[in-house]
Length: 265
Ligand code: HEM
Image 1 (cartoon, helix red, strand yellow):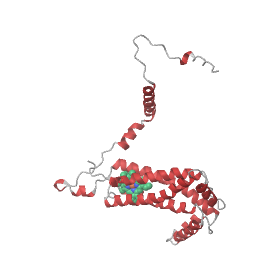
Image 2 (cartoon, protein in one colour):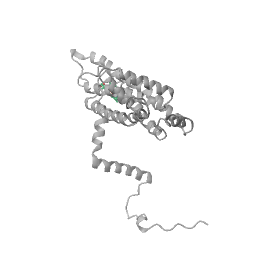
Image 3 (tube, helix red, strand yellow):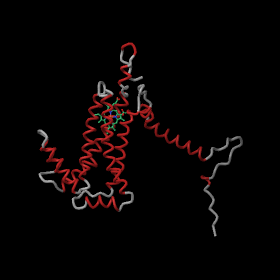
Image 4 (tube, protein in one colour):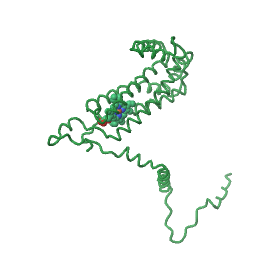
């Protein structure tokens, strides 16, 4: 038998309506109102809406086209790598004895493991392709010129760091292919002028390729470089918001009365 519910405490009971008082808003309306109040509450204390407006409501030049989405596409590829990487790190074990087995376990036993590992593996290639296309776009549109040189330099560092991610990630499955390919890669680094031998020593973690190498590659791959990439993307996007984007070169060439057309239309 179902027992009757106890009465609500007085404080929680709805107040009786006063004569002439307006109809109370429906729960959905109340919920929407609550959302606005919460955003207002945060904004009053942080003034974040100003920063959000500054970043998102910008004038963009005429002629902006699909090629301008390559930077954001690269950023989403990076975010996808970060998210799938976190899930892989929950199962991966960076020790010489268990690394291969833990990677095999992710693919064969963990729920959606093969899918997440596949996304991470193919995502790395996608990110490299996108970053190169984005760099080509900014190069051919002349976006590296004054006043955006610093953003180009930050971009070059991002490119190198993306390659470092691919290189350090390749060793982690610790199978025959990744082991020998990484030895070749580290040896190639060693042939570089002046810094080369120090770099390959640093990567190996000593004279021999072994357990320290793997944990070193893992730390670089999942802590050092992603952190640096995230910080540099922040700086890169700050400069994009601050300086605006470049108009396509053919529009600049079409300028009226001989002068260069104003870029930030
Ligand atoms: C993780 C890597 C990168 C991310 C997430 C990224 C993101 C972006 C975004 C969202 C934009 C604005 C929209 C656009 O033009 O596509 C941009 C602009 C720019 N990026 Fe990148 N970028 C990256 C790497 C690079 C690289 C490798 C270079 C060149 C070496 C570069 C140079 C530039 C320049 C010069 C601009 C200004 C474009 C303009 O004013 O028209 N970026 N980036």
